[in-house]
Amino acid sequence: MQPAPVLLEGKPAFTLQIPQGHALSVAAQGLERPRFFAKSPDGRLFVTDLHNLDDNKAGRVLLLDNWSEQEHRFLSVVPFMERLHNPNQIAFYTAQGKHYLYVAETDKLTVFDYVPGSQKQAGEGRVIARFPAYGLSYKYGGWHLTRSLAIHRNKLYVSIGSSCNACKEKEAWRACIVEMQPDGSRARLYATGLRNAVGLQWVNNQLWVTNMGRDGLGPDTPQDVLTTVRDQGFYGWPYFYQYRQQIRPDDYFKDSTRAPGLRVEKPGLCGFRAHSSPLGLCYFTNYADSLLNQRMLVALHGSTTVGRQRGNEVVMVTGRDRYVPVVTGFLQGKTEAQRYGRPCDVMQWGPNAFLVSDDKSGVIYYIWKK
Image 1: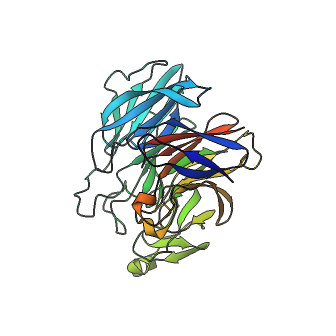
Image 2: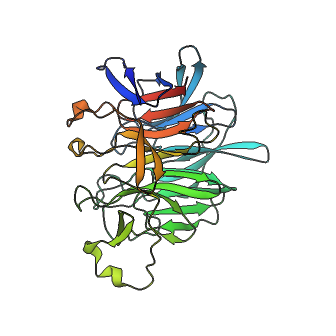
Image 3: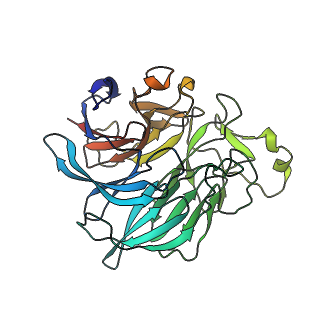
């Protein structure tokens, strides 16, 4: 690792640590709450922006445009879509020569016709799926307001988090991944028992997800997990959790775990420290640095309780329950004032660079192999 000084407008200077032989620049700043990246069919970069931590309808989709190779930053940030309900992720899809844009909001999934080169999304779009959306005043707390997307082999995959920390859900479309056709038809449960699988990526015809364990069982239990997901797999929540490559019963549901038919999948590849909050993930291919090539990188958003000293870095998974920092230094103390960012997504951008979004300071970082 090597130091990379960071100076943001109107904020104190700090230093991140990045891989040897790389350099870092602030590709965009002054955003509100940037979340997940998406590359369009015409090669442009988009990022969602949740506006703030509230349940709101002021979210946006931003176009990061006019890249300056000399300054290593985007010279313009264009509001491509506005007034959205917590737009966590978007995805592009092309069929029969036509391009489509899918926008996942808390309450719905909408598909739009996408026009390459456009600066503003036109048309109302068509809602193809509805999701539970009770808001933060819901009796269980209104947990997990974001929806995540993946597209593979002409099918959509949508992750829907739980409505609570630990409970028996009353709705089928909770703590799950739903599969559907591009038009929203033939929707079905693909995987269940996933408390909040925020990151999704298909790698070599295998769906990988990051999944957050429940709170309330102590500072170290259960672990947050990076795991593969199979069709009709059950991943434990709320009855079981993963810890040190073991599937353990949750004592709060000990009577329920005796019910027949609950076959839990094997432990996932990597258990992160509890409350690390893994979000975006990216499998690097044909990357210029052999240490990062063909590796999975994960953005650890970090605990809401800063004193736990968990997450707040981008890591590379190296084996079972093994991972090492790739971009670190966002957290430099035990107070919120000493937390300079919370990584949300990581995306490879060409053969020698990658991007990291920070939804605390409203920054997009560009890191490249020199």
